[in-house]
Length: 212
Image (cartoon, rainbow, N blue to C red; front, side, top):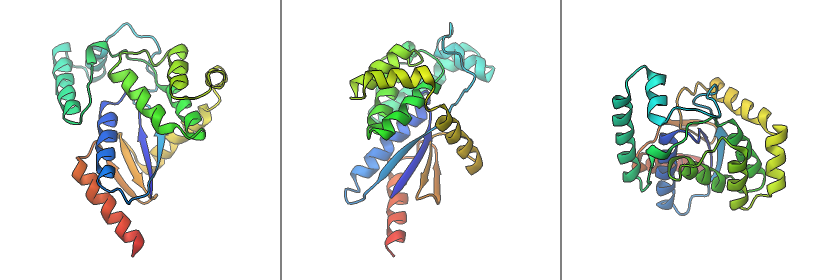
């Protein structure tokens, strides 16, 4: 079974959805799955360096006040905790995610895409790392076993910029308007951080259909 997932490393629902999918797959040990992480930018125009924290960034984006943004994030922290994740929103550093997506494509070619995705999400939401800085991204890549020089060259030359753009364009062709978006066997779509049981039931039905 092939599961393509459009998501952004700066998307809290994407991290929660990833964990829910993983828990569903743990309950379906006989299911063989190939997961492909696809690029999607929630804010393609986001600056690499911002003087706004996550609360002011959110408030500005939606035209609301800071207190509203803090309450929204408090709800998100609780939702993450229910999924077994620890979000540290006070330390999140808003940035542009384009280069992170480039390294995800490199990691895919090296058989380490899922490790890279997890490391980037954790770096952004839990560890308070600046994942827009090349040196931070290269360190994350190195930590999961990618070659440091290769990662540096990818960022210097924008080696995977075309692939990132292609992923985004493909999402638009499919009508994806929100992430995470899970596209199963190039036929079935699931949008959002669905509950574990929803993932489990959907995967079971699709696998049974394929067998029959």
